[in-house]
Image 1 (tube, rainbow, N blue to C red):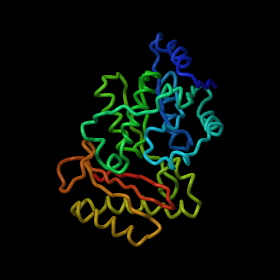
Image 2 (image 1 turned 120 degrees about the horizontal axis):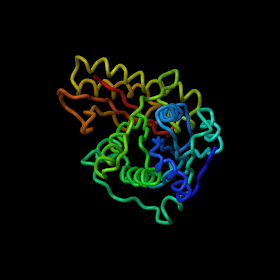
Image 3 (image 1 turned 90 degrees about the vertical axis):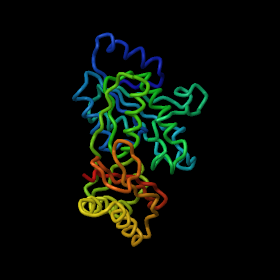
Length: 281
């Protein structure tokens, strides 16, 4: 398995494939890989001649430095998991200095308002950090197709907007949320939960499914009230937000239109912040 820590070496290696006009699939991650990441890799591996995965904990997208310190870094274990898909997958695992050339700061992006909703309003600067690192990685890998999970649906829409605005010839592929047997959305942060807490966290998806059922006949206000009331009876959770928004602009909705809607949630459980979403149509 090829593992690159240096971007110049990776660029040189990938140039061979680009000259042959081979398709390159790319899965950007922050490591601590789980079955959700592996499902993205499998899809990329099936659909492209070559697949690259990046493993890089990006400091500029963390507005909470304690969260950055606690984020799991498990490169050796990650590589072993990647091998279960294929040892032909190329791994890019750079240092912070390698990616930022000693200047660890975000660029500023306009995503036509997508960046101000939900995660953007609760995590200031987060999407500038996301845009900065994704753009850097895209410029290095120059993929044909890039794969992102729908668990971070807002991030998925922002990456699509980034590609549109920069004119990069990259196809962004959104992939379904991978879930544990109890419905909990797979996340690297789940590794900070005990088994008991993971069982409790199943309440998140259970409530989202109930919200979806209520959305058919009830108002947006009534559905939101239901979700907040449901979590108020479970004090182990601290609600950050629950919003219903159209998929295209992510602006929280008050009334229903002829649009595709999603319910978006962020909650804390034992100081671990968990996000999830569900299609409501």
